[in-house]
Structures are given as C-alpha cells and as structure tokens.
Image (cartoon, rainbow, N blue to C red):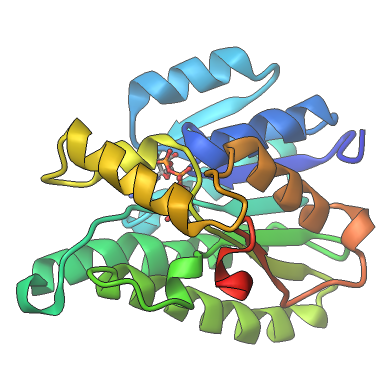
Length: 249
Ligand SMILES: NC(=O)c1ccc[n+]([C@@H]2O[C@H](COP(=O)([O-])OP(=O)(O)OC[C@H]3O[C@@H](n4cnc5c(N)ncnc54)[C@H](OP(=O)(O)O)[C@@H]3O)[C@@H](O)[C@H]2O)c1
C-alpha cells in the first residue's frame, strides 16, 4: 500500500500501460484520476478502478489539461503523483512524412505531455513524483520511426531539464522508456492490417533478447517504483523496460 491516501493523476489511463498503472496505483491505496479520449474505454476503466474519476480530454488540447487539474483541485486540493503516458505511434519513412503527421504526433507526444506536466505540477508539492513515458524508439535507429523518435527524444531532453527545475520544489521527475509492449497501440498504426501487425510482432519478438514482448503490467511496476518513496533518491532517470533490446543488441 505504497500509495495509501495519495492522489494520482494518469494522463492516458484508459488503455495499455496507463490503464495497468492506474489499476496498480488504486490497488496500492491511491485515489486515481485518469484521462483519455475514448469515452467507452474511459467509462470501462473507471468502472473497474474503485473510487476513480475519468475525464475525457485530448492532451493536445492544453486547455483540457488545465480543466482536469482544476477539477482535481476542487475535489482533492492536490496531486501527489502524475503519470504522463498519453501517446500515439505511427510509421512513415522520411520520403513520406508530412507536416500534418509531424504536428499531430508532436502535439500529443511532446507538447501535450509537457504542458500536462506544467498544469499538474501546480498542484504538487514537496514529496511529489512525476513519471513520463518515453520510448526506446528515441534511442535507436528504427526505419520509419523518425517523427515518433523525435517527439519522444524531445520529451527525454525536456524531462532532464524540468527534473532539474523541480528539485527545488521537492518533486522528482523520471521517465520510463519501454521497448515492444503488447498493448492496443500495436493495432492503432494507420494503414496496417492484422497480418502486418502480426508480422511486426514477430519481428519485435525476434529482436528482443528475452524473445518476447513486454506486458503493460511490467511497465506499470516500474512506474509505481519511480513514483514511490522506494525511489526517493532518484530523479531525472530514464529506465529502459525492453527485455534488454537496447543494451544487448
Ligand atoms: N506499446 C509499445 O510498444 C510502446 C513502446 C514504447 C513506448 N510506448 C508509449 O507508451 C505510452 C502508452 O502506450 P500503450 O502502448 O499503452 O498504448 P495504448 O494502449 O494505445 O494507450 C495509449 C494511451 O494514450 C492515450 N492517448 C493517446 N492520445 C491521446 C490524446 N491525444 N489525449 C489523451 N490521451 C491520449 C490513449 O487514450 P485513448 O485510447 O482514449 O486515445 C491511451 O490511454 C505511449 O506514450 C506510447 O508512445 C509504447
């Protein structure tokens, strides 16, 4: 019960690793607030997580992040932990990338996440912890992954700067950088049918030294560690959760 009595906000908490983390925070005693775009999965998640609140909010629309934080302020008065996990994928080689696709990915994975952090931090104080989701994609040369890698790489760079700024306020900020994790994200790649998704899965399994994809719950465990007092001397860290993919290749 490391989070007993804590107020936790998860941006992108209605699917995949955000949902797994939200459930785990609640299981360890937290009151959990989650955001997401999809009303149906948001309602399902709230129904599954005792005492939780859900907010339909697009992280790219910065005013909605402020609105979420204001609603939490009115209800609970503070945030102890924020997990900023919302993100989208998508592949295109340099010759095919478009300004629209760049802006879409970066408005969510970079700009939206940074401003969500800014809004949440206003309600956080000494002992607070923030975790953001990066990706090994920011640290590896994967053909077709340039736009996504740039956004997650930007988030990594921003995380290190903001972690330094937040030290004075007693707030720790860390990043988890997953490798291939079996979540609904895999099925959300525009233009990829189920056969192509399965081919991608097999390629990833082959590439991972542990010869499998990770589970959302394995990422959630790392998130909870970084958000907990167990990580009280850890800030500005970037934890790879990738079955050894990045370091052992
Ligand atoms: N799966 C992997 O292999 C992998 C590897 C490395 C990094 N990541 C990163 O891990 C994070 C979680 O991904 P996942 O694999 O768990 O995928 P997922 O199941 O698709 O979950 C993505 C989450 O982000 C939310 N989200 C996306 N765009 C949003 C927006 N504009 N506003 C608010 N919420 C938004 C989704 O909500 P809705 O469903 O309502 O849109 C959902 O809750 C992402 O940042 C992703 O880039 C994933």
